[in-house]
Image 1: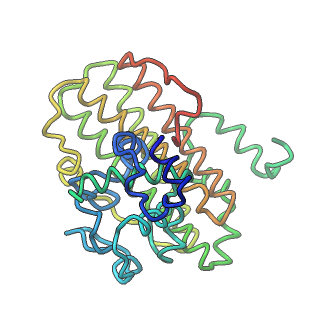
Image 2 (image 1 turned 135 degrees about the vertical axis):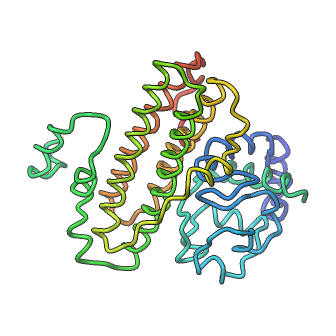
Image 3 (image 1 turned 180 degrees about the vertical axis):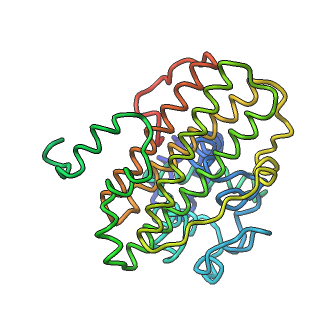
Length: 120
Length: 192
């Protein structure tokens, strides 16, 4: 939290948001907010998430993606994941998730957890 | 209430003063007949949201089926699991009815075996294990319904999503009581 405040004060939070995320809190958020549809290692309502950070959208094995996501060309990293969790339809019109995470800090924490679980 | 609910709906709401929505209740509350006549890109996105919700409900039905037939649940917990599964079936039927009224095609359910594998049901060894899985899924479902509310173009559908979230939250509370978990430390514990 302190680190995030310092980064924000220095005006570099946007450039280094990964460092600002709290993966431990992100794990809690992931399980309670994302866990209704997602798991790390199994495709459920949504695709498996281990390895999602750095992956091209629509390429998790054996998941039936929307055409919009498959053809988006989006690569999941800090900014794209933040935009996705802010408003999926705005990033990729025609997607099927539509779940939004309103708080920027929560998004950063979830992304930090996904990044950690992707070995990045 | 009388100012925001169409009089034609009020009698239905009075009759359905229970925790579960019937298929026609959701369709009626959602005003889907009007939407069905005015399909648009926004309405199509609403259908996509409902279909994702349907996938979630299908998974929940399978999860309770797996739990109920596992031999791990004892009465009266087993009866509660069957009741909650019937709630999810009512949600499923309501979602299917609304998706069809909006001109969409409901997604098909995966088999119980596929869901069992995805949820690692083989790891369930005790009644507590089953209750923990159900508790986790119910909280996730409640939060999923809350998290899609801002994405609906039709406010009536957003309201339905809130009602579905309330059902899932009710399930989570009962399961948490059965597990003797403490109450959430803070207010606004869902959607956070």
